[in-house]
Image 1: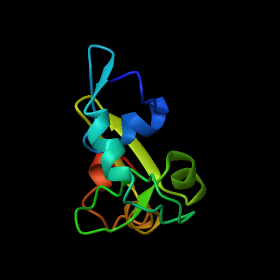
Image 2: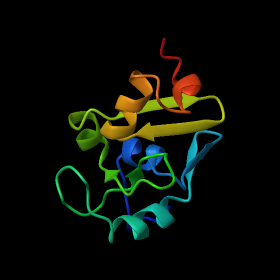
Image 3: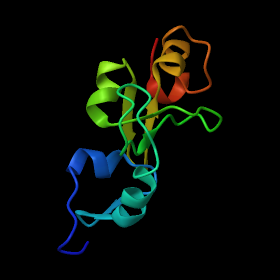
Image 4: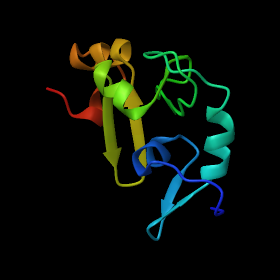
Length: 105
């Protein structure tokens, strides 16, 4: 990343195109560019780079907004997921294919 940009680590890490490799977040500039045009589904402000992991879902968030909106974050060894409040409810109620990933009984 250049000297002209900085990001919150949590924002960068949970952005879909960003990967963590040897302790370094890669593809940050792509997330920054995308975030300039995406508003948060919770606060309505720009810069929301964390989208629901359900491909057809349009919901995007800032990390703190995702927490406030009752989204679910899940990190597994080779991937990361965020489910918006609607899809999180489906997981909790056992109606979602993400149910096995989130290990909810």
